[in-house]
Length: 381
Image (cartoon, rainbow, N blue to C red; front, side):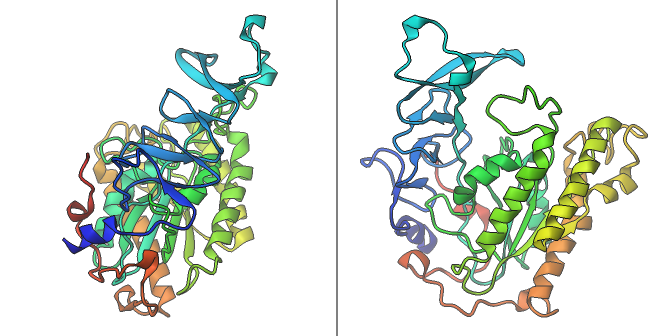
């Protein structure tokens, strides 16, 4: 099959090396590759061969938990999680520390770093525009419905690449995406993504109000949201202006966080974050799309109604497929479709075409539009 040959013969970006045993790895589009400035470590949430991800340490110490790493010269140390005795956390302890001297002072430890997940895994279309969704687990809930709504109009995919039956966290809190944007804005093999529209939203992983004792190693406390979202938006804005986007800079759209219908208090935090997000997007000239108000209008104010769309737990923070399908149809897809139309001067999105000859990674890309997902998914080896 031509697509299969194309994906296994692609050349990685200069300086990027495929993770895994050289004797068994396939060097395909779906295999994680990392630059010389980073290390390959296991990331159990990565669907790539060997479940690899990248971490920005040279000669990193990969931790046995399968998703974190420590800098060179450190060991990974699992210990009880002070906020939940049923969980362990991993810290990094200098190899130079004399274990016989007793427990290391807390101030000398540092959290192990979460390994970055790989980016979107479908080859970009040359027949229709490309849309990249970036967000947490809520985005993984509406992704397939946005794709259905825009089928034939645009190719839609989510970054990071997630297991379809275990879409844990997605891009997580904004601080994690900012740290891992170098990888989530590329295909797994390191090929830079060049989408036409980027829809991003963050919010539900930034609701921990205990800033004194945040979950270890994460910036998921609510007071960090504003600064971290500003950082994310700056990263995406600078990336969108990169000269590698030969046809035109991608259009950025930010989706305001959906409500928490089961807690008026938590929903007040979300509303405050949405106000902060509006100000940040205004600063960078990024359009915002309100996902909060339409759900409130459809389902009622928090605690006024338990659940929605036939799901007693809907928007707490997730919803049944019917709710996500409605959100995609009523809010997200129309906003993306409008952005695509504006890129063509008001014409229909399907009038779009790329003027450049697509020769990325040294191969000729098949201009066949949106290829069926079943044709593109890798065989687990």
